[in-house]
Image 1 (cartoon, rainbow, N blue to C red):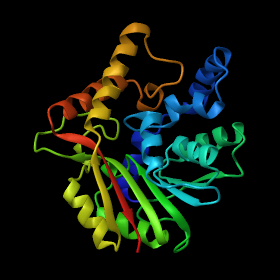
Image 2: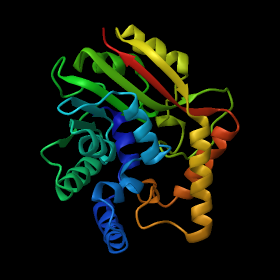
Image 3: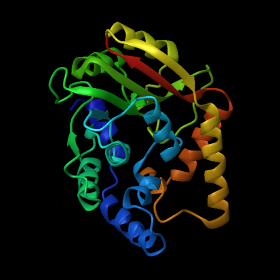
Length: 276
């Protein structure tokens, strides 16, 4: 792990995430008969838009039973568990943060998906996976912490099978305005590497993949933060919410992200690509 990667992993490390999620999950189960994977969605799908955004990405992937999916920067594995439980896929996840991997594997076991989902520690720049071993690869808000986008997409192209599809759902630069920190992925600019849409597309294509779709999700993001603010004002943080993974300054991070989007500096963008 490089020095920068260690800083990124430290940024996401909570130290007491397992107990915090367990307590929130117990409260949720007492008041809902929803499926466990759905109950966890508020905390384990750590990207703008949450579960609706995960569904949006999956709809573009043409998933079907038995396909092998790699979720790069998988976090707690929420998207991986959703793909496995909804589409009967086999999903592997890779993440830098040991706590995320440990807690994620525990949650996977508790919801009965250990035969379909497995998370491991590793770097997106040196994926611990064999060549041409996956039908699909996903990135949910990952590239903002990775400076070398060219190497990132070369590694993804390496593990993707011919004909395989890539979905990138990242926060990207769409304006020149300075960003306000902290944000969910970084306390300051030292570990923040938000790229432009053209830079992403260039790196993807240089890796031998063909970009098939580009779609800004700014409106989805604005709706997401508006609803989050309204919920917080009405009833405070939910038992299972992103505040658990963002830490004590979660409110400031959310406000800065919403503000950065509102002033036109950044937006979540979906890019789809295919390996010939």
